[in-house]
Image (tube, rainbow, N blue to C red; front, side, top):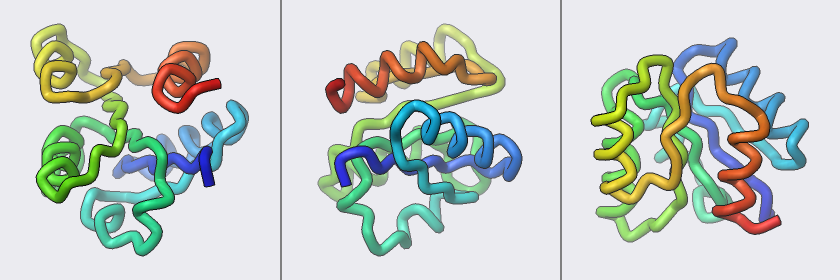
Length: 120
């Protein structure tokens, strides 16, 4: 499925809001409470983009991105955070993250990044 997005967010209400938001933007959002549950997902190859919180339990969003790359998966990744800072943003982009967005995520900004990553 071309429009399947994985959302890894440990806050259940934030995860539900993001799933709803990407649905309203025309995508299918699958929610995961942590990196381990996402990595265990059987249809990982169907996911077209990862949206992950920077601060996750056990494996952070950036660590998840690195783990996927080390396993040979070049999954486009958008990091989201309630604690944005320019240094972390620059480091994330330098590590191959496609976008580093502040919470609450702005629909137009997210849609622009998704279109840039996945096409219109």
